[in-house]
Length: 287
Image (cartoon, rainbow, N blue to C red; front, side, top):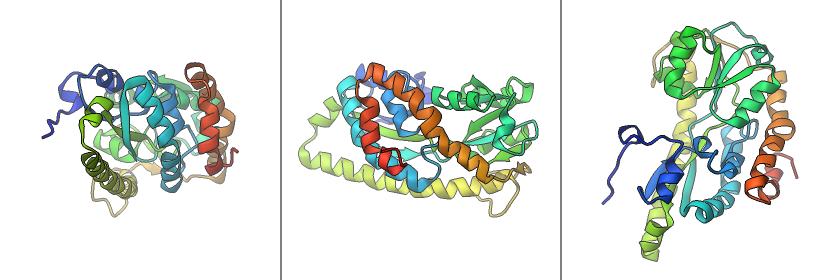
């Protein structure tokens, strides 16, 4: 029997999940990866800016990097990684009119991790870390000009009420995961471990498929197109993604996000970037 408790009802922040699992307060959790990366920088290797521009690449990266991350989480936190799943591409919503990615120059942009902050800085924007719950008001009051999240999350939170333009270029795919404490895992019989892992594998396959469907539908909803089944229709300006924008995002891995992350990760986890290059490098041409 499993006792389920949503994080927002128990007063635990999504930045503290690994800590509370290590302390034994919970045996299993849905892990917000980027939010926990300050405790473990190795996590960010899953979803560097520009690394996962589409679902196919994101799945390949997740499959290649999950064993490396699993070993690290087991060693540092006593947590076994049961699998990785996506929220979906993280895209741009802006209050001032924009026509391309470069128009973020001079604008204040809400970000959610340090890797994304470095990328926004490279465009000439000012990254502003703000929790998701505070973004709507921050956009409304002009604390930030733009904000980055998935189209479905933005739709449900009403961001299109306080923005005008939507640039659907995926900078990250917001990979997250499921974890179980090693103490709980090791109490299970081998056959029960196999059953539990198989159940999570099936769930993860469904989430990957549904996430892509949801991304397309929510994007339609935000710009007032049909079909729009899952969200509320708005009338944001749908900014075309240019080849130049795609090139900027693709080059970000090699030029910005990997170098800045590798330096931080190698300090706390020697060999971190080398392991990433061996497992993930071939997928994105960084052998």
